[in-house]
Length: 360
Image (spheres, rainbow, N blue to C red):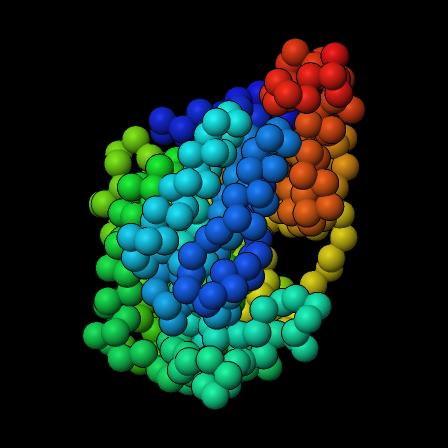
């Protein structure tokens, strides 16, 4: 069974190919970026539930880089220590843990995407919001117009990611992921729909990719040589020919590989309104194309909900791992249940010993 085979990225030995993608929890309710008991239970339950790799939610590298006031951060030592407690527990359950580092750019200072809030829109300054920044003063849908970053401010962004990456290492994470997808700052620079700059960070595809590549180089330089580095990309904006396209991502993946990236986490969209052909496994072909073009391992996400579907994706070589998102929100033990359904015996599965009567 391919899903239950381990995979090694540099020194990280991951027990299987069923992974938990980063999903915002909006549970730092003191608006201080500190993960707490909710995060311990959320990630700990899925580690106990058999997932091989768990990637913590989009985590702000600066206070103004958070998606919402309730999002997690990693810009100070207190946050580092709070994450360390969670990472330690995940490790006790045999899972590997990564963290996704992010700057939300023009989509920062948003209300959380929760039922108790009226949609994704900017939080006013009077309600605890802050001024947002972006490559160009172009507003995201439903958000306030951001301020354009100066060239000097752009050049400071890699340092903020590198500082957070150092803290991730100190907290015990096994993998660092850079978020360059879903319309957040690094994706905003990549896309001609949100980047109209005239300096060295705008214009050609190479210039628009420069910031991401500088971030990758900065992070790679501060994490151990043995630690894997992942980048999440939106493989297409579904707005050909105007937006960022799959062929652009195929080119980008080669540039990332040359700079020491070990894994491409493939998603799509998020930067501009588009008609997305959503359906079961709708992003798998994108991941397969990136994998073939770059030779890098890929993980894919997007309405992968059935065990046989997940096994077929990995068995066919369309991806090296599957990310189980919404289904894992519904069932913390999706990984264990899926492997058992596919025929794995109890002694082949990482059941917590306290639960042995559930499968013996």
